[in-house]
Amino acid sequence: MSHSLLKKILLLIFLCLIPVFFSSPHIISKTAAMADSEFQPNIIVLNYHKIDNKNISLSVLPQDFDKQMAYLKNNDYHVITPDDLYENLEHNKELPANPVLITFDDGYKDNYVNAYPILKKYGFSATIFVITSFLDKYPNYLTWDQCKELKKHGFYIESHTVTHRSLTSLSNKQIESEIVNSKKALDERLQQDTHYFAYPTGTYNLYIAKMIKNAGYRAAFSIKYGNVTNDSNIFALERIPIFHTANTFKSFYRRLNYVPLFEKIGWMKN
Image (cartoon, rainbow, N blue to C red; front, side):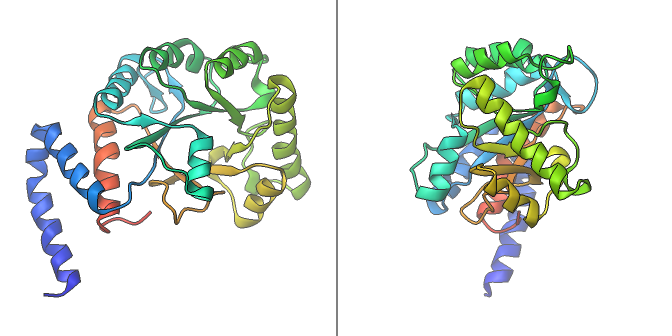
């Protein structure tokens, strides 16, 4: 029997068992654990925006976010930092089992008001990519003092440019200004060396990625759907977005469990 035919048969069997998996979350966890014993674990990078009660896709309800963080805690996921991720990809640093990096884009105030207490509750930290010119300017965005407090408690405050314009629509001079001046502001205001970047609207190209590297960043995050592996481009790292849906937890659960499993056994490519 050919390898390709065997894969198709296994996929058919697995799809037939999906209803069983939905009825018992522990079964899928055991299946994933079996896969982990045969394949190198991928790194899950969760991508959030807002944690509030607005009925829009970017706004995960606080109670849903709490449920998701409880699931991570109770199912032996281990929250890592961007430095952990970088050291693993570049220097083969060993990571804990089931590594997860939690990220937020834009730097909304609700990340501090709503997400921060929930993350503290479970002993987690996160990385927030902020739009530096919005801080202390717009009431629905973080302040520099809030950023300082978050950093003091283990959060990473990183760059999402100065004005959140799509970099592919700008001139080279404008791109340089967005990536260099945002880093400069973060370095000066937070007394740090800012190493990580997230592309506004997810738009980038290889030339922009090279500019990010030349500006002194270690890595950059895209909105390309998937898990980070040794084959990932460190200046276009994949993430898994989490949105508000009709059943937010089910969507979260599927993305956390099925996508990594399918990728590990070769049924889905990034």
